[in-house]
Length: 166
Image (cartoon, rainbow, N blue to C red; front, side, top):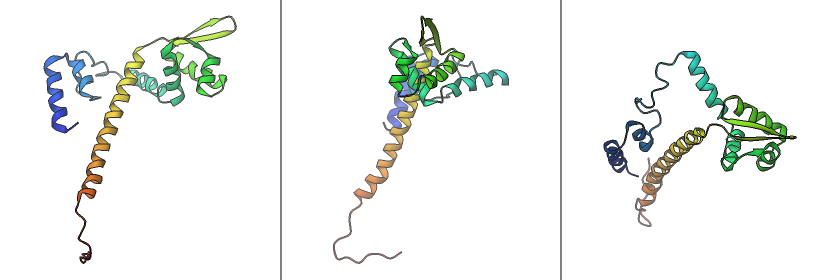
């Protein structure tokens, strides 16, 4: 999407949506705080440390894979271990971290423990980040194509013509 087209689309969103929706629709993460999303503004250091710990839990690929598997509903540790190709002990360790931060809930049934999503808003956060990354990669591909296309579009010197020395 070109720079001008993107800015036009953002301006249209600004005229038709609420402030929080504008930032999400524009693809800007960390845009200016609005009344609906200014929760971090003015937080004390201790609270910011808790926010950082929440993001740190989400920074492990196996945990993200577990969250994705739980989108379809609850599963026990053995199922999750088989689907992720890792050990039950490893899955349990990751699920404990996710549970500690309120992302998953656990329920014991007989000899099995089942896990389910406790906070579905984590998917909105992950989708926001994935969308932002996709747009960044798309822009990088467009920029790269400009250089590759520019070099390929340059006319080749006629056969037998002397080459310039630099």
